[in-house]
Image (cartoon, rainbow, N blue to C red; front, top):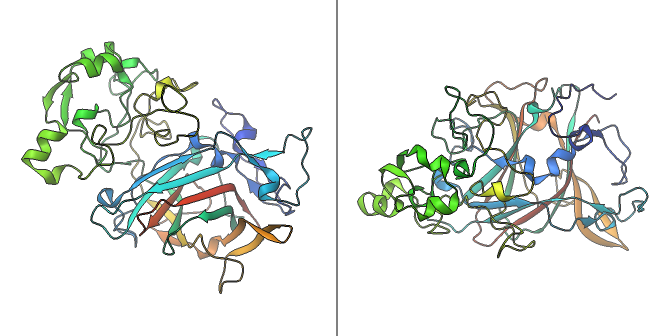
Length: 388
């Protein structure tokens, strides 16, 4: 029996966020599908796991570079589910997928991680107490690291992605401690609220205070200003020379220490270059993206740092024939494996961090952990919850 979800419709249709599972995967069940899990714009860079958890080694210093995106061209549905019936009339010839790609390069650590999270409770009240499993349609053909782990966290998860205890936002305070929710050109410097020269590489800012005149400018004017409108503080280069321990080194991009510059399908950034698609600095140029970026994912004007969640770690390389496998289906085309498989994860197999409850699920986080210097690519076609 389907649960009744209370939907708070903001700018998204209910079909975009919640729907009974379709039969494109060839499995007829009573699971509930969440298309929102596949839309890249619904995901945000995640906070590190709780320091009291078994994953306490995953900190800002061990966070590697990672991007997530929907390929410009959707996947052919029958490449995922060859036995599915598709047609133009049914509008199911193609399927949107989410790709997660790491670009970890050691940085002196044996293992690196990164993660993304989605604020489920912003759009509906989600009670999973009657559900028994989590289904993930996954393709790990792009994974080269035999030791890779995919961590899944469900529950109350801290919004503090850079772990500084401050509600970081692009929105200039105009109503006491609140902004107006409208993105001006001068605000579009990223959720770290920092211009490139003063970024510390960890997601923080070395500028103590900016001149209010920055809000009357735009990115071109800001970077033509000798100090980028910073009134007090150290640049990354100055901080590195004085005390190298307070900045991250080496950097993926010396001109953008926090790696938050946006560029996609504009200028020199083509539709198949996803390297800066998740940036929050300059993303006001993206079509339909004229609102301030913020850590406040649930829009309550508060930084929520509670960590009470269910967690599990899985091997995305496992196959149906492995001992104790979670894989229940691997699709084939003319006898050849497509690479797509269904992992069915019993909710009772999740461990607990803090005191979470399945009756009020607020956030969902994916964390990728890898020991390999090579890029790792995971593809996800569908995420569902359901009864057995």
